[in-house]
Length: 226
Length: 226
DNA sequence: GTCTATACAAAGATAGAC
DNA sequence: GTCTATCTTTGTATAGAC
Image (cartoon, rainbow over all chains, first blue to last red; front, side, top):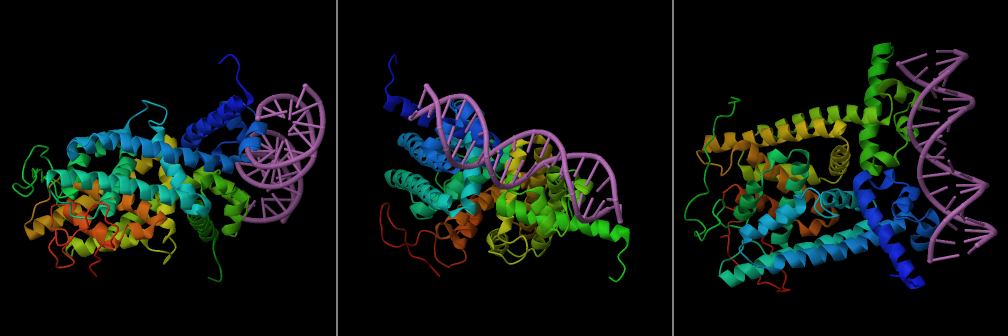
């Protein structure tokens, strides 16, 4: 870009600031990041930040919009290859727990939680955030319903509710995984999701749904508190 | 208490500050609460806060300890009546989503998330927090394993992993519920948890699991069996 | 549209009196 | 142990030059 126009520079500044916000909000949290730190990370100054977004909160809202789009794209991409749900869940789980591959690798869960927390306290953020979650549930649930329809199987819940449960497991397990990875092995989550939807857990192969009970691991050697 | 001793007053101040911290950290978030606001809410001044805890962070750590105990007690209390898991899950779900009954009513999820977020960023908080989650998983899993043993049924996963999945569903669904309560009805969570553990879902309503289910993209209101 | 400089407010933290 | 008073740092936000 030898000659960036004004419009280009403006757009570039917006992007830079939003990216910096995604990074820093995830890493340190909204309130722990100063406007100056954001501007610095974006290679600009606070003046530019205020000019574009009116302040930190405006930047957060803009970030939320971008975040919405990115999530939609990512989900659509991952849901596109409609393999069996087992491999499917594996991909989703990894996309939620991946260490630091791309920019929103490990930060993803942190930013997600940061946004949730902010949204739970401030309706101005909570409303669009709630809409976003609804869209995720819908995409997730309809993807699975499509798969079920294609394979002739049936899901035990309607699509939106299926999406809620799947998203719930992924989120809740990811939170635990972040603090103690060993406590939530990938296989457990994948099997759990399969079992949740009435598919046979522990069996990613073409096993009929209730033919055999899941591998009832029988390590009953825990302390007996009686 | 006509004559509070020094020790009593000291203990009282600690308690007051910790309670205020639980309340305010949940409501506004750690960084959004000033030391003065905490002291005010506790009926003390910042001097007392620094004297007791050395600062806001020390107060957070103390709060985490208390939080651990309270969670353990609460879980133990709720797990004690070993009815069937269905009613069991119902109680747990309600304890996680209750509006504002007692002090840690609605605030519970907020504070929980706030602590998680802080812990994910700061190992000093993350380590004890991780231990706490491990204990919760253990209590949860062993309670269910006990029940399974008592009724002769078998769980598809070992106790700790069962606890991880159950806690995951509860947390992940609670996060969604907070933003959009209608999207995560209680029945869905209870049925989901039952299905997850290999128990028959849909048990609360004596309706067979595949009774009627709206097709994908069917805007018809789903049959709400209640 | 962006930068420099700065006014203004708020928070963290401490010293010393009681 | 607790309070009052205060010091220092940090952050928000804006005004005006380029």
